[in-house]
Every structure is written in structure tokens, then in C-alpha cells.
Image (cartoon, rainbow over all chains, first blue to last red; front, top):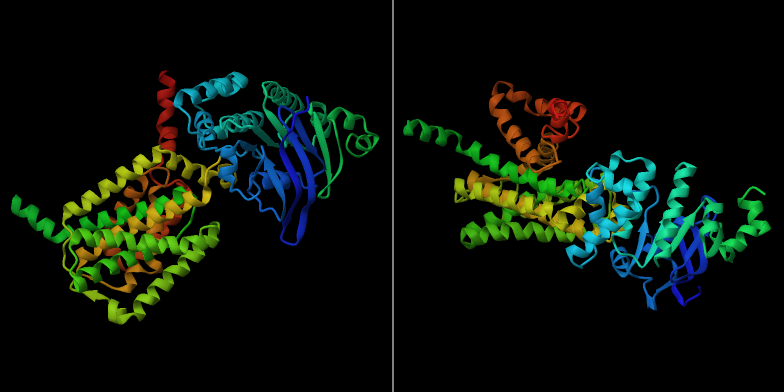
Length: 240
Length: 289
């Protein structure tokens, strides 16, 4: 299972003004794996992701992606390099149709129309609900459908690593399960996934590699299944 | 008959041609609005275009086509310079910064008397603008903007307007696209200023102040910024309104204000709102199928 690290983060620090949100963390993503970063609200999870995507300034630290230092790259270059984030709160463009949203996902791609059309079909196969509603406005979708659309849109960018920010947020448990099942399926096709979650149990269940973050520091790491059995994790996050 | 027409033209040609000026101005602010920015520098860009072109025509004797080009390039350059520090501001802060820039432009014009004639402005500008110049300018602007809307750039603008963070995550270069919208908007405003200066014989700094800035915004919002039809329609109505309501001339600004309040309250997407038309008339069609 273990390959060389595809993405390596060293000493990442991010702050909002005087408040240090992320205080120097290290972690690795390996090709073909699902890695998760779990923790409570305000622990620094989303901050970490936004810094990876280049939307937040890093105070210190190095991000190496496939041997290249991308620490100082602007967001659009990072997306073009293959690191694509699904935004928290789904952030679909509500006045555009489902189809237009998906097409916008391919914004940075320079390959042919045929290739994009094939990927679009793949995404519709993955999320049949989206195909049914492809000409409807994204704003009229349910929460779960919007999350699917956000994931589909990120996939249209042909990512090498998919970054997800709390895909379970505000969704009914049955839909959460559905989304996680889909993520696993995408992962089995070879896509590397980095998942940031508050839903610790679900996240650890699917993760090959997991990190627990508390107030800006990583306090535990290991294989997902191992952390799931860790008494400390059970105490703090899984209700005993 | 011909005589009646030509009399009509003599009386009303200025009004008809200012339809074109105002359409260009409304389209110029539509550009920045369509990219999610409330930038209020369009009147200033118009002024920069008007003064640049008038000075080049009168003091340097440049030919009209070159003057038009310069009247667009000068505000584009100004937009680039003030855009770099201000475009990262959002919402009302951008509006404030761009309004302040407009005041600076106005005060600079007033205080560089040797070049600009100061508070009295410049008079005796040759009236080189023909009706077909104006028509061509509006048609070209509409065509370019229409093509742009359907292009990758237009999509990027739309994404930025909807959600800047999401746009960034899609790999759209948010800063560069905002700058592009701002600069193109400045070019259109400069074009309007140039054509208008060579139409009205004289210009003065009052024309390019706060009132004009608000009027430009009002025309676009009134018409609706969901499509290109909106700003053109809005500007046409706002140009003709004072003539139609000439008995109310003393209350012109008040009438404008009331109209704007009513629009914002009852037609928040402007008067040209295809989605609402569908809502009004669509049900019947739905029943038939």
C-alpha cells in the first residue's frame, strides 16, 4: 500500500492576524491512499486546507507536491498542478446550471473537448442524480446533491489529489454514508484523497492514514483503523 | 417630410447621441458588476478619456481615430495603476476607494488649469463625433461583451461574482480576471467620454463627479445586470426620462431616486429580468405541454 509521499507538508504555520491557527504541522499524503485530518471545530483543519490550496498565506513551512515545492504558488497554479479542493459549505454557483458548474470545474484544463465530455459522463455515472438535474439551477439542489456537485466539479479538474473540507457537514446520516461510499469508489480507481472531517468515526473508517489535530498541533497519527481503536480518540471524539 | 425629419434631428440629435454615451457608460459599469465588484470610478475614467482626447485634439492636433484610441488607453492605464492596490478590497470598501479616486481625478483636473482649463473646463472642442461613430461604438461594445460572456473569461467573471473562494478553488486566477474587468470597463468609459467630448463642444470637471458616478450605477442597476440588454435599456430610459418628464425638471434627481428605490424594492434584478418574465408568462406555456 505504501508508496513514496506524493504530498509532503513540513512545519506549516498559518495565522489570522495575531492568532496562530496552525502551529507548525507535518503530514504526508501517499499516492492512492485516503488520508484524513480530523479534529474538533476550530482545531485548524479548514485553515490547513485553505493554506494548501494557496487561498491563505502560509507563515512558514514547505509544501512539496510530487517533488516540487509549491509553497509559494498562487491558487490557480496549484489547481493546474493537480491539487484540487472541494470547498466547505459546498460553494456551488447557484445561478448556473448543474451542467455549467461541472464545465467550470474543467477551467484549468487544456485538453480536448472529447476528453472533457468523457469525464463529464464519468461523473454523471458516479452521481446519477446530477445527470437527472443537469439543466436545473444548482441553487435548487438539495444539500446532498450540492455536495455531489461540488465533488463532481472538483473531479472535472482532473485532480491528482482531491482535497475535501467536511463533506459530511449538515447532511443527513444516510447521505453522508452515500458520499463516503462514493469517495471510496473514486479512491479505488486510484485517486489520492485528503479528507478533513469533524465526523471522526466516518473519516477514520475510510482512511488509510490519519492525523488528529488539536488547537493547531497534530497530536496523534497512524492508520485510520488503529486510531479508531485508540482509547484516547474514543474518549475525546467517539463518545467513549 | 424630409424637412420635418431633419428639423427633428437638429433639435434632438444631442439627446439621441447621448443615448449612446450613456449606453457605453452603463455597459462599462456592467463589466465590473458582472465580475462581482462595486467599483465607482467610471465617471472618473470617462473624465480622463474626455480630457485626454480633448487636449490631444485641440493642443496637439491629433487625428480623430488616434484621439479615440488614446481616450481609451489613458483610463485603462489609470485603471491598472489604481486597480493594483484597490481591487483586493471587497464590497463597499472597493466602492469607497474608487469614489475617492474619482474625487482625486476631479481635483487634479481643477488644479491643472494650464492643461485642463480648471473649473471652467475646455470649450470649443471640434464636434467630430458623427451619429454613426456612436452607433458603431455601441454595436462593437455589445458584440465584444456578448462574445466575452460566452467565453472562458465570461464564465470566470460569473464564477467570481458568485463565490470568490469557490472560483479560486476552480483554478480561476481571481486577481487577474478582476483586473481585466476593471480595465475593460475603464476603456468603455473612456470611449464614452471621448465621443461625448467631441459631441458636446465643451467639457468641465463637474460632469465627471460623484453625481455622474451614481447616475451610471443607477442606469445599470435600473435596467438589470443579468444580461447586456439591461444596462442598454436602463440607460435609454434614464436618458429619455428628463425629456419626457420635463415639467418635473426641478425634481429630476428626486424622481431618479424614487424610481431607483421602487426598482430595488420591487424588481431587485432590474426591469430586464428574463427569469421574472418566465415566472409571469411561463405558467401558461407549462400548462399547454
